[in-house]
Length: 504
Image 1 (cartoon, rainbow, N blue to C red):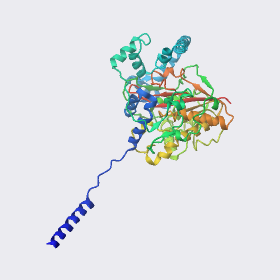
Image 2: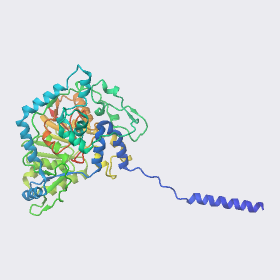
Image 3: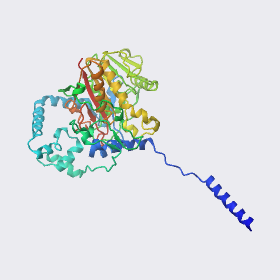
Image 4: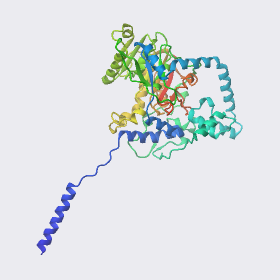
């Protein structure tokens, strides 16, 4: 009997062992790179963009909008006619018309801005001082803010048309309930510097856990220096932005989600008829203010859209397109080959592609204009693509080092441009750390290690002719540049752009 019981126990033990041995392992859900990017952005951006973040986030996850740059080296008359039939708008024509109106009414604009400034400088009454923080100039508000403010403020402050729009939309900016305890930057840490904490880039020294979610500011060593400590000078751009007449670029109006047809081959010239690109990518090229004969360096040129726009303007005397990696250089060559006719001697003479580390400048003071379209978080790409994402676990160190790389590239650009020349720094990220923060860090390095003098150009007035196309971010505490915010009505960007002029 005992032997039988022992045998049964052994059998049960064997069965349990076999069940455990061959039991199907439950699959642990893997965290995708897209999910990592979403978590990062949902923690980092709401403190910066506030009630605008939900609409920006929705736009980033929605279908991107493009503009069409007509290829001047193809049969462009037919292409233009086709776009006009589709109802697309000639961006350059409209921008030039608005700029002309601005010049004609500049005195009126200046008086209006001066009056609004006077209204907002009262210091004697606390209630007026408090109200100025929530009642910015109507000119500076974007569409979302106009609707929200109009709904909340007195009709005397905002016209009836905006109140009607707000009520019709039943607009409610709302808030996002997020846990920000993993990144704590106390207002007291930066309040004494008199800057907006939401756009500040003081190192985030108080982090709790989440080793894979370390803020880029940890690599900064000079970000807390004030303007005087980096020799900052500013200059206001007094003229509206210039749109080169040779550029023929078309877009559909705000709210129009129509698509352009696929580019076609011009069989006579053996090139494509137009180039599609994110409309916000025009801003850095326009900010360069290209002039006839300019020597231009595109420091991080691949895949080549901005280089192509510069060449299509028919203005530069030389365009040097540089990138570091062979795979990216190959993409650049393919783009140029698709849009520039073979054997076109004039362009062959002025267009040069180089391979090299943009942080190492071989020619100093050699260029009139330098564009630094720096590698960045590429927010829109990161939220849609798992492959080759900067949010891969294996690329964490690379991501954390981005601000340092970006600042080195900008320092190199300021060394490569001649005195009197212009450098434009841009990213396709919303990160204030990789935008204003990098500009601040680079200017600090230049001030400490060279004798270069510079000034940051305030383009807030100059870019107003582009308000019909872009949703510019306002009242964000930006100190060195402008930013195009994605929105469902105008789903371009994001695109940050800072213009710096070298004085000597």
